[in-house]
Length: 81
Image 1 (tube, rainbow, N blue to C red):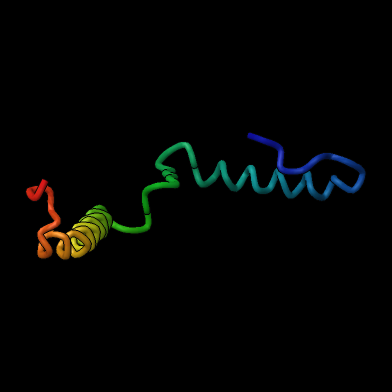
Image 2: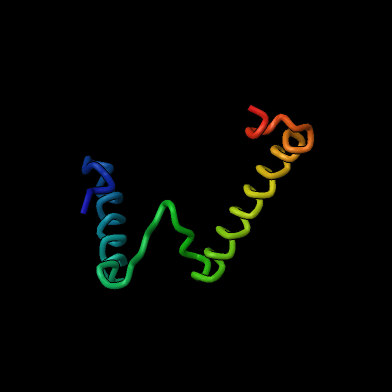
């Protein structure tokens, strides 16, 4: 564990607080079943995360098709080369 506080004269209270938090973390048992992720939303179910990803991909496809549609209608597509 990394110390949370530097021990000085007034740091006694901080050291006591640090020991309290260390003991709390030990009681929780962060070694067994503690998960953390910056990139994956652990607060939602797997199904919700997959659904959000699919919806996002559909929005991207729709916006791409809408941006290409005027080119196709005007005949400025690749087949005119």
